[in-house]
Length: 283
Ligand SMILES: [Zn+2]
Image (cartoon, rainbow, N blue to C red; front, side):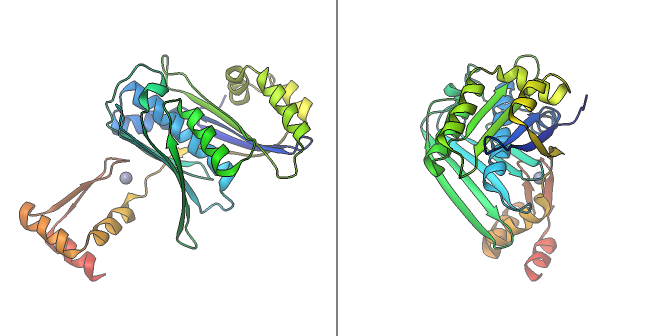
């Protein structure tokens, strides 16, 4: 049994679908240790991180690209932001970190916005699209985002187990453009009768239990990789300072004597003296 968080990608050649399975547990614990969430926030962030990873299976053509989901609402939660790359790197946060609600995700969301950003590093372009957030689960919001933005018949499931331990399982099945309606129906029928939790648990923790699935669809696994937490704030913080402009920074320096910024993802503290700032703007 593998202790690491993993994602698995593959195809169902006969049905013309590609898929991605995700299991997140240790990475979420790691982020939780840095940011100290309420159990509700930890679980919900885990769901959003899993959903962001699922979108990398859909939307990312190259490994250097990154996807983020950003949710802003006016309920117990103000903001959620999650990033993922196609090679399994994730980071994210929820504001406020100690929010509480009755464990249904739907009551965490009020009126708001559900936005997806895709960053293409080579061209330095950001592609954004957004829908209105609904007072439903995160999974339901993600599904309506995909339906509205792309009109594909993707099947998505995001499962969390908040009580015992925050453990997230998720899948996406996405049809290739030439997939017939009949094949989409066939997969829909299979998934309808599937115990998703058991199915995903067995995918990650048992080698034999899913033989039926593997055989039925002649499944081809293409890639299995670790999911891991990484924060690249070093360069981000400098860019943030540069984008604020010298005048604004100097005002803070005059008032505080130094500039102190804490990264919201990894909680690393950056302290800049007047000389540091001068050197930074000279670069
Ligand atoms: Zn950081």
